[in-house]
Image (cartoon, rainbow, N blue to C red):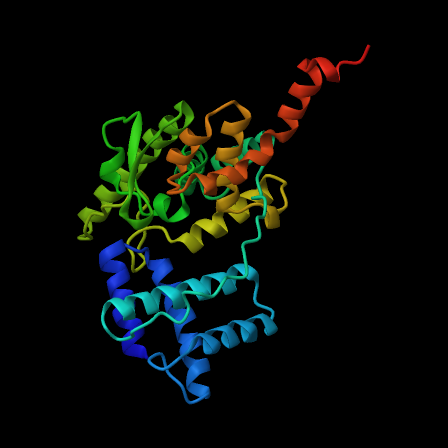
Length: 306
């Protein structure tokens, strides 16, 4: 079963350009299913539809969320589709099974004053040597709506030359252009000057130059997602906000929400966020419900009060 999993993940990475985090999640899900089968003396090659359904019922009994169970079914279904294409199975036992359904949760977001407080904290909080970097990080994520992985892995070459827009490589290797606001450009220019000076000093000490905008001495060579997550939490505390309600992802939500509030087209926001499907973007339309309701109450002839 381990060979099935590794072969499937290799194909997923090669053919679809799946992100590392997606591969890790699918690998964990499939190993869990393999362990469950193994304890029952079964394996991937002989598992039936009943086995898959029983496994999903078992995961529900453990209290796993609908989203987690849906992801596990998706991983199992895709692995068996791969196995069928490779001639390892004559069928896909997971194909007829309906998933538990998706829970449409409204994304958490932040008000404009909250974002302003976070940006102020980034420019004033922490060691002086980190403030230019922190302000650049926060201005960029709010101005562009980038995912955390896209932000921390941004190559420095993408922002050279005072660009109005930058090229971002997103999920599945898909590329998109995102515009920079005036404050983001200012923060970027200030950080680039400080970063380049730090890189010059590092090269003088024999250390190689980094190709990332936000370099780090960690194994990946750039600021980690975990480090940025902790930074956002500390800035939330400094800004007087509840750190439990502030994450890098809520800043991405704030970007989309505030654009919609300003009248931006949903398809434009889809392109800026890098969503492959417009349905993913449509969850943000909850923010304009009140505005539309007021519009109807104000302008519809049957809603007017005499």
